Image: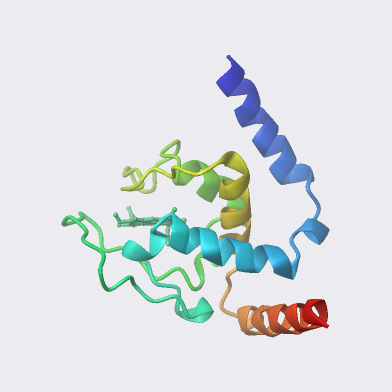
Length: 138
Ligand code: HEC
């Protein structure tokens, strides 16, 4: 029951948290989470300069893990948040790996992924991150 409530709470939060909370700071955080939870054992994100972990040992998979540079064009954050928890399937298949982090981390991560689109926005976002960290360091 509690589990159900917290799940509902997440998605209410996902919908109601306005874009303003999706600041450049959370971009950096999301990248860290992507590596921390070993998403890069299978996936690359060329657009964010995330390469595959060369030391990763991954079992043979039914489907090759895609590069996620433009994943935001295909899926929204809400769907991805469910998908990496194995709550929804893609073409009849569950995601091979279940996300082990907190719900908050899952939201940060999937919101960032949802913003990855091919228009070159990501490059601009990267530049903003650098600017904002420079500003913080002053
Ligand atoms: C064991 C390897 C593996 C790991 C680790 C892994 N994935 Fe995946 N992921 C896959 C595979 C394989 C697919 C494609 C599955 C399919 O199409 O049925 C996929 C698909 C996806 C998709 C959908 C992509 C699309 O174009 O439809 C997203 C989003 C995703 N993964 C996010 C993540 C995140 C976030 C993490 C880290 C928390 C992660 N993955 C960790 C193997 C992995």
